Image (cartoon, rainbow, N blue to C red; front, side):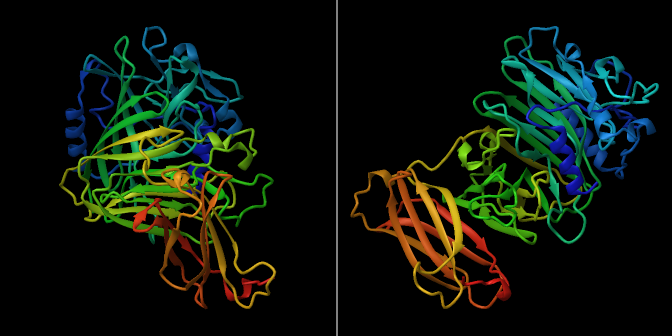
Amino acid sequence: MDRRTLMKTLIAGLGASALPLAPLAWAREPEINSDARDKPFSYAWLKGYAQKLAGNAYVSHEGELPQTLKQLSWDDYQAIRFRKDHALWADSDSAFQAQLFHLGLYFQSPVAIHEVIDGKATELRYNPEFFDYEGKQPLGDLPGNLGYAGFRLHYQTDYSRDLAAFLGASYFRAVGSDMQYGMSARGLAIDTAINGEEEFPRFSAFWLEKPQPGSQVIRVWALLDSPSTTGAYAFVLDPGRNMVMDVDVALYPRTEIQRAGIAPLTSMYQVGENNRRMDYDWRPEIHDSDGLAMLSGSGEWLWRPLENPAHLRFNSFSDNNPQGFGLLQRDRNFDHYHDDGVFYERRPSVWVQPKGEWGKGSIDLVEIPTVDETFDNIVAFWHPEEPLKPEQEYLFSYRLHWGERAPVSPREIATVQATRTGLGGVIGQEREYFSWRFAVDFTGGMLEMLGDNAEVEAVISASRGEVEITSARPLSAIGGYRAMFDLVPGDSEEPINIRMYLRLGDEPLTETWVYQYTPPPQSERKLY
């Protein structure tokens, strides 16, 4: 399954309130698929098992399910619904419940799911009584070792809506207080945006610990498997205004991995204020996230607005021990979207907070062209400088924050609120050459305290071309400043990297706005 098919399936299966799926899972590793009940389980055991598994060749189990499940129509597949009265822990005083996704159609890789109680694990065998089959599916007798496609979690504040879901490859989603799904995270990215085929590792087994009475957190463990690596994952989910996930990762490569993506985030950007390439829709903006925020190891705040490029675009931001990064939805104004169906202004931002030192590497951003909103075309992740080598253990720990706002943000400096672009030049004067205008709005920090005569300067650098008609002036409508400039790109069509921030004297007032502009071909440079 390629990225486009996979992401269309995930988006359709996980809407504002995710829909259940169909069953599957046999021929798993003997230690996991054992009929023994109450087997001792711990994260240490899982790491040991993942390391042992890495010594064996990868075995794919995709498609190991009855033909009747493969042949389901999309409508009949969606008509297989989990029965809420069979939710895990529904008959207890737990603050959490878990529901299972059925295998079938596009979800053809078996996932083993276990319940952990007092350090003992028991596999949840497939049970047709867990589901209502409302369509006309010729399912027949399905085997007890069929398994499931994944699971979703519900919380005591509203058991009718899920707060997290793990479904498809190593993808998972969560919500904050808005209870609105949006972008996704993944366990691991391999060979994203390079020549050749991207590898999609998958979570082949999960362990869900039954929460203790009164506990407001839930623990989940996962086994990752792929041709290049195995891995052991430990999650601690803590719901709230922001959903907080603590993630511990242990990777055991089978082969050398040149391009590993740690803590990968996946989102969608079709059209927005700064990029209107695909603006055929009646809605003015369509995106789950509008920018990549970064806090470097040296303490510099960076903001990179997202784009829907005409061609695949890859940007790499080198760093040493980053303090955090995330794909954010800063624009929370309904009037900017006018979508009363999926409510893009409510989509959660996700912030990655590394624990410990991650060393040298880069925060990589991949932007893939898309013609519609059903395709997640944005990927961001941490890429270690050194390749991951076989017969080694690699440990990473981080915290994910899902919600309206990132848990950390610049306090003393202003942040970018909007980026707009268009044809440059001086209104009322005939244009003699092509230029492109950038208008960037900043709010927060010290900006509101500045007097009208404050000599605020826009500090701009570009890798190529000529910057002209620069300005930085207060804008009372936003309680901040607007910086504007034109860029004359010259004859080349190669991308131009731009950086800008505002300062007063020698003191920076804002985070650093970074952008990559690709000039159009000469034939498209209309002067109007």
